[in-house]
Amino acid sequence: MRGDVHILIVDDEAVMRDSLSAWLMEDGYEVEAVGDGAQALQRVREERWDVLLVDLKMPGMDGIEVLEKVKGYNEEIPVIIMTAYATVDSAVEAMKKGAYDYIVKPFNPEEIGLAIRKIIAYQDLVKENLYLRQELERKYQFKDIIGKSHKMQEVFALVKTVAKSNSTILIEGESGTGKELVARAIHNSSLRNEGPFVAVNCAALPENLLESELFGHERGAFTGAVSTKKGRFELANKGTLFLDEIGDISPKTQVDLLRVLEKFPAGRGDSLN
Amino acid sequence: MKWIYILPIGLVNPATLKYVAEEIPLKLNYRCKIMESIGEPSYAFEPKRGQYSSAKILREILNKAQAHPVSEDLIKILGIVDLDLCTPILTFVFGEAQLGGKAALISLRRLHQEYYGLPPNPPLLLKRAVKEALHELGHTFGLTHCLDPKCVMYFSNSVKNIDTKSDKFCDSCSILLSEKKPKVTE
Image (cartoon, rainbow over all chains, first blue to last red):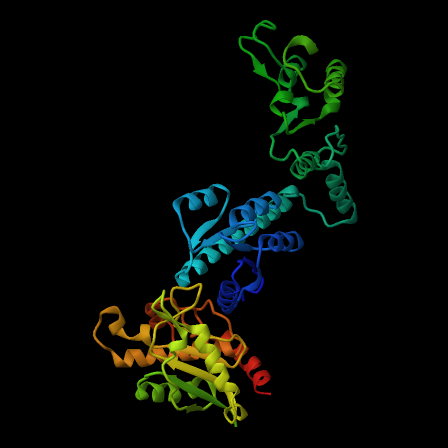
């Protein structure tokens, strides 16, 4: 039942290793026990462990040193420090160095079981969260785009391919074929998906306003520029800017756009005009 | 025919032994034989803890299981003590067993209401004893702790947990038990 949970016990006393192993195995865990820190570090490098139970006082490398080295190798591995000689100082040191818990031997039977179950429950939540995020991302990437045809599958594949790049991408297609949906899918599939997706319908804005919309302006740059305004390029910083109906804008603005696209990052003001 | 042997260790109430011996076959389909009692396990006493080492007693039970002529028809052996048990790593245990092995051990000490300063309740003691006996014997058949709080294989760290669970194996554990039993009996 819990056989997929791997626990590594590190204790120099054989009787402790045997006793704890037996008890955890009765609880259904997959358990391995080693007698010193060096063996523990070797096993940590060799396999994936869900929990490490490490004795504090051991000859040679003590539990704190094992904890530090394990955390140095993989910070995510939960380490529980066990000791028969609990002190406030060692407890503070262990917790500061990243121990998940610090428990005193002998334990109440429920204490160690509860600590392990909490770790496993947390790890399960992390895994579930990761899975759900991936699932959400996967669904969101192509949401609203329906298509099982071979051609649409080619579009999906192309979206995935180009999404990896930060290059300017030209999307062509008849009006109403879903160019913006494809642009959104590219954005959502890209590394910029945490950033904004800013869409501008170039055809809907007069040329003088379009320049201001795209590039913004400083206060007083022209009559009516009563305050500094961020352009869409700036608003789309670290995200994606979608320029819709680009073919409808004037040749002058197209030249300005070309200059911007060639010389990132975009600056605000009249320097581009 | 194979039997589950019950080994009283030190002073154990005969009526309790008899009740446990009669109840186990109803759940495990093996009849029980009560063995002659062996003496107090002074060898297992841990002076620092004021308790008895369950591992040391379990080894003694295993020695009994391997002794002739008992080993011939013995499927499992269950030791019963009325002393407080501990392991090096745990403050106390209600029992201990060899996972997938021959021997198991239960303690009645913490099953008595008197242990908690309450008036004696013999029927409750008997129910708890049967549940713990089935639980530890379940381990010897290879069962691990069950997540179903009603299953007898649910881990109990208090008498409250023991009282909450039933004396039955849940469906999953029953299936596992039926799969594991023949392998052990072969």
